[in-house]
Length: 333
Image 1 (cartoon, rainbow, N blue to C red):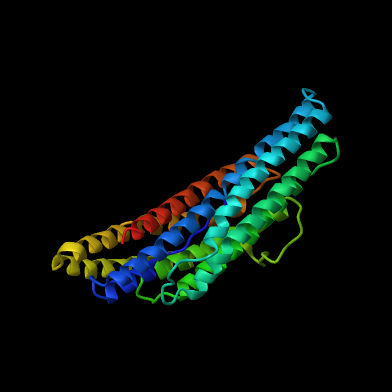
Image 2: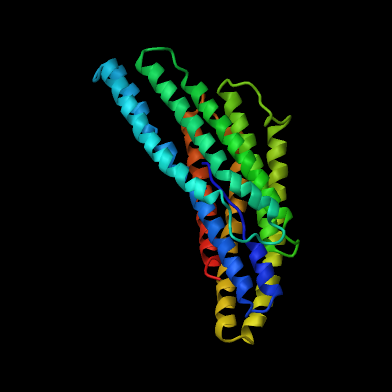
């Protein structure tokens, strides 16, 4: 569920504002786009570390079932952790190269770029805390100590809440560096609202698991979700209007362009064509989150909770895949 999203509409602003044959500008745009794409991929691949924890839980189950001794399971758990640490070290090396930042920073994106440079460290901290918690949980279960599955899930959600807060901060900085005429500004606003709703829903789930209220608690859960959903719809409607105007402007320029300029405008228009999917994803996500009040019942109805998580993950997958597609297109400028 821990996903990373950031836009490149500032690149389009530079592209439209300057001559098409300004190769230095285009090279700078391409360098920035390529770096942000790699940051996005890095953050998205962090989700894979949720999957590597499954063997730890399975080891605890084998001891409980009597198919493996405690000593054997603990030995395998140590081997499992060594393998995960190898993966983490390789991931960490990738993160260090990204922390150097891009060779060029787009005007208006200085703050968001600084936040992105710190993102690999933040992601790794989140992963390592999660892996440590899983190992401790599995070790206690293998040794026959009392463990609280719901308490562990609540702790996981608290990690996700902190992660989303970091993404919200980053996206807010990226949004504030964009002019109101850009559809990306309104898409980012919608995404921020949906991530805030995500933290509210996770807070609701945590409390229903028996965890105490945290900083993400609100007085009226449903009212907060409804307000955010209305804000998402409003921002997406404005984003669609801005997109239509931007596309019309670019198509007009494309009609009189040729050679390199025409090819570059084709790339920009292709990127613009990905926005309707992103807009629809955020509207769908807001609807899923606004209905969560009666669905997120992990104690009384775990099947309902699991169904919510599945639907939420589908929404996030569309959001992330479309964003990465847009970044890949932008890198071709």
